[in-house]
Amino acid sequence: MSQRAAQVLEAVDAVAGYTTYIDLIRPLIQGKQIVSTAMKKEIDRVSAALDLALAGTSCAVVSSGDPGVYAMAGLVLEMCRERSIAIGGTDNPDNGDQLCIEIVPGIPALCSGASLLGAPLTHDFAAISLSDLLTPWETIEARLEAAASADFVIVIYNPKSRRRADHLTRAQQIIMAHRDPSTPVGIVTGAMRENQRISLTTLEQLHQAEVDMQTTVFVGNSNTFCYDGYMVTPRGYSKKYNINK
Amino acid sequence: MSQRAAQVLEAVDAVAGYTTYIDLIRPLIQGKQIVSTAMKKEIDRVSAALDLALAGTSCAVVSSGDPGVYAMAGLVLEMCRERSIAIGGTDNPDNGDQLCIEIVPGIPALCSGASLLGAPLTHDFAAISLSDLLTPWETIEARLEAAASADFVIVIYNPKSRRRADHLTRAQQIIMAHRDPSTPVGIVTGAMRENQRISLTTLEQLHQAEVDMQTTVFVGNSNTFCYDGYMVTPRGYSKKYNINK
Image 1 (cartoon, helix red, strand yellow):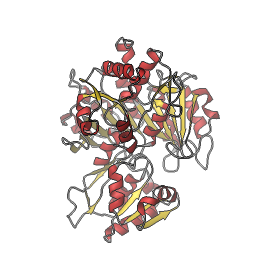
Image 2 (tube, rainbow over the protein chains, first blue to last red):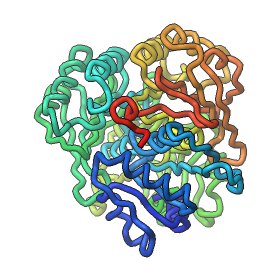
Image 3 (cartoon, each protein chain N blue to C red):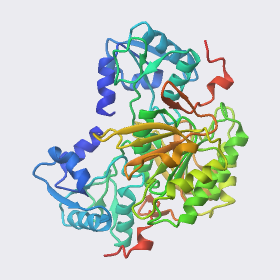
Image 4 (cartoon, one colour):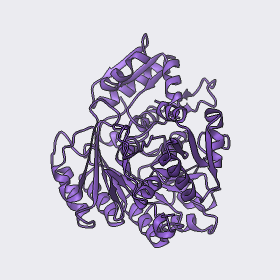
């Protein structure tokens, strides 16, 4: 957790979040009002947080990783617009007509996961969620196709959904039409948590990988290699310079 | 800086980094050996760090943001391979035959910048560097084209190079062939530093934006909107649910 995140948690009156995340920070939020709801109740949670804040009870909405990457920051702002709540930043906290909003950045799963694998993201990459709860599957397929064809490293969020088991296999097929079957693939589940699992495989073996809802999948580009158990996408120094000096 | 990054800086004997970054952390590294070099001397710096570590002087290689996103982690691992240095993780630090490597994740510019703009990255996005020092310009154009056509939010790193001024204008042209000229664009320079500058513009005005080598540009997707000065890419809740409850 960043220093700023710790400061904000210390300062607020209330904390809203999915139960699992609340449990991870419970020692830090003793005595504060807790708005804890189950997964998929995001709208209720944000709605309650906004109601509290509008009534003068400052409230932190917590999520894992970075709040701006497939997480809660967007929904908070979306709901402010829907409810026509005037908002402003922390640079002008005394403006009584505006709800003061601060988004505290964090380390996203794509960075924590990458650091455990080595350095798969040292070149251009695309982040794609396979969840079709809020996005048409055709859009997801088109993005996989575009990212694969232009040789982006591909970071896959939500590789497994509760409703369908074949999303990752379909993604594998789309990517393999453009990329060598031996392309390195890194799989990280529960990065930096007690259940952390890391494995390296290849694109052609990806359908056999064990993934769940806490898993992030990293598919290398055409230059990605493995060395001593690390997955590395080179920036291109060795082509340009005599690196071996 | 994360707690782990602070712990590692405390523990090491030496620190290697671009002078600007060394200056930012100088109070934390009093008394340690410093390997400080100018920009574009990355290979010399990593080479010196590896020499120190192989001789038994533990050394941290520092960069800004996250070390795995367009930064130094990849080069460290690349050079280990080029020099055939056996490496291993911190889970087995007593293996004398291996150089022990730890990559400490951080908050990348794409997250710190996004948090200052609002929530532009709440849906699928592509990160593309416009630097053609180590990447052919044709590859960069192909990636811009692919990302634009599949409606990715696009995060542009290195929008301005010392050698060429027209990269960003060319990127604008490519993206505008697929996306509305009024698409919101957020521009963040020096996120979280003293020289921090934030502005919102549109895709059709992007060529007039003031950018430098510390700037990150965020081009919205077809659903991105601005509200009260915040840039937001919705996840799609408002289409799926009655968000206004």
